[in-house]
Length: 315
Image (cartoon, rainbow, N blue to C red; front, side, top):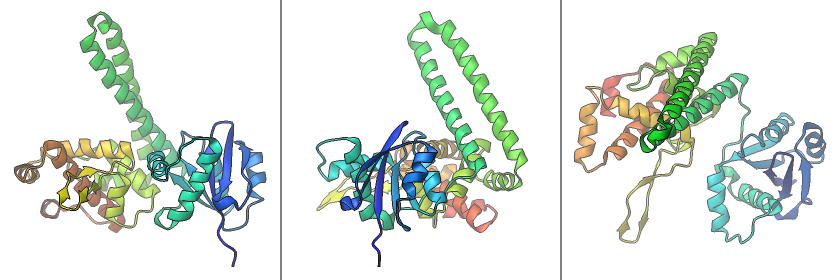
């Protein structure tokens, strides 16, 4: 039986470097354009697995073309790969070495990874809108903080603030218009908005991400968002648990915002107060509530069931 070929591809705008696990095929630099990619893919045996790092948008062309030709593609988290590179004691960094590291990681960990599935046009559009909105909100927040520091720039900053607010409103309008055009998205959003603290933006983000990634359980959804607590124990030492933060950062941020809003619900406030009395900080309590919201969202969409507040509070 032919052994699976594991290939790593270190992506860049003009070219990408490829290498295989244990040198099964020669390393090479490939032009990052469709004709060259298709020509290279034809040289690979069926069943080949290809790993790319989620680098800007440079990986999308290779991932899409490779998947279309029947290869198994894995789009990997850059932060996770950085930790892995340090763990194996790598002392140098080149495109070829990065490709070799990707191939090695894939060969050893592929059974624990989720193969990449190409997003639909709707999912791409929503991701783009949500990403643009997040960037605008971040920049507007930075400007508002700067206006408090430097009064000489306050007038100019206020004008920029107004322009960014207009841009954010335009993104929100496009999100509403897109939702109105798609019955399935509208139905998912209606179901998710029953969750405390979940408004249109958080609901759309949840519906989009949970439909794009085939998560097998609520625990997998929590890990995908990086809301899973990371245990730190050694011998008799018991360190403070922290979030892994290894998943979708924007989804995690939106869920935290939703949790802060949900904590004001009269049915949920006592639950949060109980967690605080047990010693949790406000941030930790909101993260626990964000996890619970995400689990409930996954269940609502997976099982097509209505939201029950009593069950949510008592879970």
